[in-house]
Amino acid sequence: MSDNINFELKKINDVSIFKLNEKRFDSQIAGLVKGEFTILLHADDSKKLILDLSEVEYCDSSGLSAILLAYRILQAGDGQIRLASPTKNVKKLIEISQLDRILPICNTVNEAISELSN
Image 1 (tube, one colour):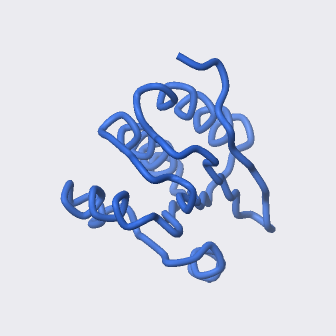
Image 2 (spheres, helix red, strand yellow):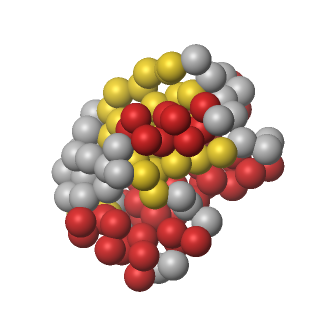
Image 3 (cartoon, helix red, strand yellow):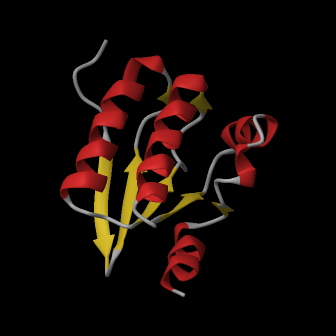
């Protein structure tokens, strides 16, 4: 298991953008991502999160679990989440697991920003 994950975090106004720069979002890194989400969403008190999945080619249930953790933390604090730019495989997994019903998917980060800014 690796001890670090490659991600970028930026903030535009009150929207946090978390870009995961990993090809695989699986059990190898899911725990680390959960830790980052917990710190970001509790310590920084972020209420609006965009998860940029444009680099992720593979995601499994562990990755979905990390995304759901962020969703639950945000829900508890009246926050909002958007998934941005998922690759075809990742989008298909989200749709098959019917998580697209609770996790809004945007084609681009800019689209997600405008949705959360309204």
